[in-house]
Image 1 (cartoon, helix red, strand yellow):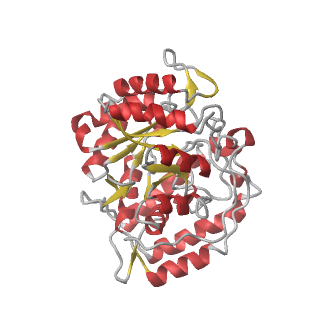
Image 2 (cartoon, one colour):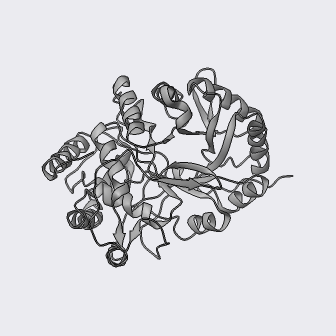
Length: 398
């Protein structure tokens, strides 16, 4: 994407109108915590000694990263969660979603993230349709674990990671995704009633059958990660991670580094907050998930907008957008961290790709993070009944 500054300014205005109308860019269950504390800053290709400003346009030469031992993906992926229905229940045009997916591939994205729970089922269908012309050139990630009736798609209470159910779910996934294998299969949330050894046992059977190539965990407890990894190497952990919420800095990311596990960031743009589209007057429509996140309440927004002000300052300095700075910060943390921003708008997808070309000098990296540590985000992200599904430890194997 080669955008002029005027066009970027116009896109910022469009984003603001978009969010004031209550539409949603991303969301799901998230971890509750405040920002701050010690950061995890490792050496990566995102930190450069070259002081020359980097281009912010998308490129078909999007760099590659490795998750786990040998799963190569584009440095930025595409989350397709909202391509069937946004949180305010608007339904995007299916043909346009296919066009975004295919344009993302044309611009170098090879990593696409879905889940059976999105829809349910419908997002996997959209993704399967979209990537069909080049399926063998991309990595499909999807997730199981919620208790969903495989015949009707009805959401039932709680979770279900029973081995027989996992295998049944995967059969449906393969049909919806129009493929013979899933490149990366996550357990969407840890089931507190099923030992992780049994879960991994089912996945190992699927790997032996070549229906699954790699597996991962989303929002897991730390000991569950270790137990799973002992059974069969975990390729990736997928947690919410962004400048707005980076609670994995002090536990999950060091564990990934220790065990050689990749780290995938969902909601890397803080459900749109980090794009600069939300201001102190923003109010969310009925059904918008951010309306029940107290970090976006009228009382807390003015305080939290200090983070957006920081991003706008640096976007001017780096000739980029706040979204690009946000993604570039994630890329600079570790060379095995991969963000998967989601969108239903072509311009935003292309803009996100441009983050791959933005590098921090060592001096800039230190300065940015010094300024970041002065900002304290206030407010919880989701109600406890949703947050309780994160950081769960699987029961012991009897």
